[in-house]
Length: 353
Ligand code: GLY
Image 1 (cartoon, rainbow, N blue to C red):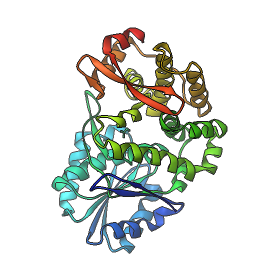
Image 2: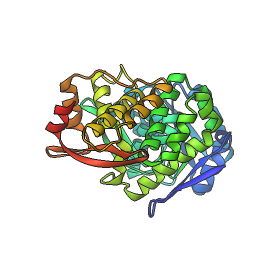
Image 3: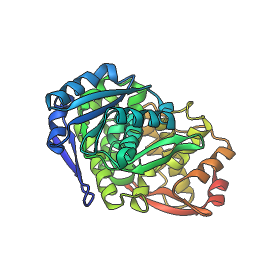
């Protein structure tokens, strides 16, 4: 068992990484929530047949009364209709503030169930059990919960830290290759922004099977970096912005593809390569770095560039949460394993794209 703590003052919580953890999830949740009676288990139509009964049985054995809420798999579920359906379901289940919401699934489940937990009764304890690589290394840690609006992704949400994050690496074995690759974009990101040794490690282990041989190390390293950054800047006004390396341009590609042509990982992979190229043009990023990132991105089956009309770049830059007035903080690398926020006028950035 590997244990990490996210040391946010007053709201610190543990991330447990262990093979077979799903079977014993109830016991770990019980030790965090000794007075809880009910657990609202939220999952989706892909994950439910694989793991919902394992987690529900484990919760029942730990004396929780469990009701399972299954949402349709897919990004479309991160919407106000599904949020409202969960609110009503939790109310019918008579959930109280001493009970809990357990999010079992990928980023969509975690974000939606997390936002529902943050808002029902003005906040019910949340447990994250991420089942994709992307959600294990990124979205389940750090407390960002949200739904999408027609105007853009994640536009309505909250910062709401979970009480516990349980990661079972075994669940990654059932992921399709493309979904695994999606998570690898975020894994590569951590090496780029905060850990040169990890970047070198990834270059030497650039296949799915090599990563799976060292999956505990990979999850631990990514979550350690995320925990450090989030603890320093929970509300994303400073250092946390470095977690968005590759994301400003990535969001433009997602927008250009109407959120269906490219996955988040594909968009972030291409976005990191483009951000490195921009950093080189601005004289900040060492010249070799875009090639090294491109090789890694490509090794995991992700695109190194994607098409994007100029107006989609403009729209994504306009919506970017790191924007302030006419300028934006672009996350760039000044050396391998180190990122910084580089303020740039939106017009200058657009002219470079
Ligand atoms: N995924 C970026 C963050 O949690 O800040």
